Image (tube, rainbow, N blue to C red; front, side, top):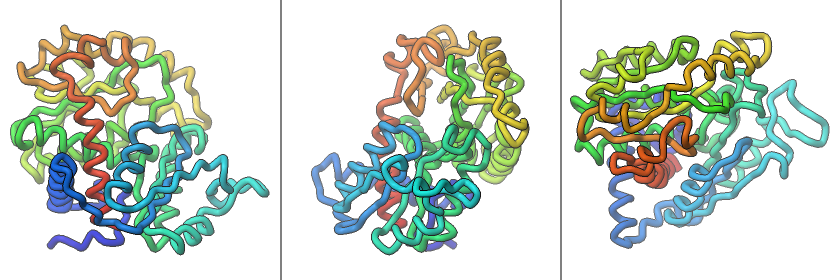
Length: 345
């Protein structure tokens, strides 16, 4: 039975049923048509979303701000360096931070939703700490908490990803979806995008391949959930350590860099990014180029959450070529987030 969306947090797709995700997609498509036709849809008139960004953002900040405006509400941008930065117990610094429990309850008295982006340096690259902070907000606030990306999940990006697949292929059955690692000179890349991507793709019943060099494994709990979704919803899930092999016959290729969780806490005592850099540098051939795209299905599309590392993760010929749908994908962030906000707020 479908539950009511109003008042619910949106932190990970694992908290939602397939039917609920399909409802969000339906609402997103409806709002996208209304915007294209110039039809007002002021579903959140007079409502406020507080946006707390511990990390930089282009697509996320602007899609949420524009989305709230189009829904008739207002988004407040909160830079932690310009407020008393919300902190967990033990992380407080006098007159520089404020306990999450206090921030959450104050904002909940003034607005209708709180969205948060946090990963990496603000949580010392301790895997899971950012997700814990987001959930700590959810514990204390009695208004919806929306995850704009933590160190485990990026559910809004995943929603945009599957909406784009639905638009390009008319559905999900029989679609081979490849989430692949790709080389980058920067090792400071969270695992959230690939983890939410494989959750969403297997939930929708696609045939999913996760590809990466050994040493760049994802969270085993996420892999287990994806395997279970594949069995439940009629798709498949496999892992490959060969990028070329993974690309063969693919309808969707999504080459994206992510760091090694083995070299950050809690698996290591401290972040050992130099070890990850050595691992990355051994796999510079993991680049999405025209040669690898020829291995994919003739109607294959190239996807990326952006920003991409041009010349490393992907060549200009691919990302600027006819198979690239990255800007449709980026636009769809606006539409899915409007649906999420309209339903939960």
